[in-house]
Every structure is written in structure tokens, then in C-alpha cells.
Length: 262
Image: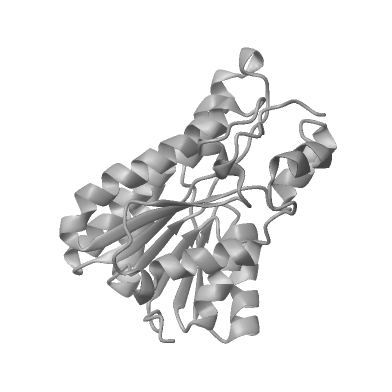
């Protein structure tokens, strides 16, 4: 089936590893041209070279700190100068800071919100301006199952991901007249470095999570990436303003994910 992605320019923030890189791989296999953007300049260059070697796709690497609006504006100005267009934007960059809300520091709140929410908004804005001039495009934002089912010790993270969910809805309405579709994906628990850190720090346990996931397993990054690619394809041409839960059934049950370690 032709996905309509061949030759499309796909920008992925936080693309040097994890879900960003997994999504880049899927897009590359569909024949897209890939732009990986990440705050870690050395890593993103290595990842772009690796992706080209693995898939044969044309891959580019750019440094980008999404917490800084001036850098976001400069980045998209550079993209417009280098390529003249943005066909697809995946706002994947994000961080996790764990602490009880009574002890959470203002600087940590600001850092998390600047990356997870403000950065998404202004990347949508700047990418959307280029898409508007070029007749349309597709944006996918990375939310989380915690936008609906929260977990203690991660209040600002949960708030930021709920913000991304609502940001996606309101901006999709504003952008529709420019033929820009915008959706979000909301992954549940994936065996990533972030989750492994949670196990190591003792803030979450495998027993707790398996009690909360009806499907009784963690997601694979490739499953999330498949949905990201689908939402950008021609097969999803009438889907906009949605947040797709990829959580093994967590949203469908009242089983609490908010319990402390069992």
C-alpha cells in the first residue's frame, strides 16, 4: 500500500535515540527524507549517519534545544533556507523529572515545561508557518497515557503531557484551514531508559505496572513508531485533532496506575 510518504521531508525532534529514532527508521523505510534534531549534537550526527547506513535514506542532523524559542525560530529558518519546506513534523523531544510535588523545585518545573510543553507549542507554530506557506502538512505530538491516568511523583510531567493533548486539539482546529493535520500519540509503558530509571530509583515497579496494564506487557517502540507513521500517511488523511492511546488498555480500565509500589 502506498503511504504517500516517499520523498517527504520529516523533521523529528529528540530524534537521536529512543522513540524519535524508532520513528525515523520507519519513515526512512517508507522513502522519506529525514531531519533528526536533538540537543546532543554529537549523538544526533552519529544517529543520522547510522540511519543512512541502515536504511539508505537521505538523513540530516541538526542541533536543537527545544526549550529555547530563539533556537526553535533559528532552526526552522535554517530548515526553510536549506529545504524550502516542512512536510511532516514529529514533536518527540521530552524529559522526565521525578519528585514529590511538595518538594518539586521551580527550576525543575521550568525546565520540564519548557521542553515538554512550550517547546512543542513553538515547534508547531514555526513548523506550521512553513507548512501554511506550502499548502499543508502533518504534525504529530508526543503525549502520554499519563495525560489521563496519572502517577504520583511525576505531577509536572503528567500536567505537561495533558497540556500536549489539549494543545493538539486546539491547534488542529486553527491549522485545519491551512490543510495542516495535527494529532498526538499517547504511549503507555515502554521499556525505555526512562522506565528503567524509574525501576532503579524505586518510584515504580514491574509488579505495579503489570497490575495496571490489561494487556500484561510493555509496548515496543516499533509499535508506537508504526502509529506515528500511519498518522502521517495518506491512509490517515481525515484524522486530525485526536490523541491515540497506545497503552495496552490502561485508559479503558479504572485500575489505578497511581498506586505507590505494591
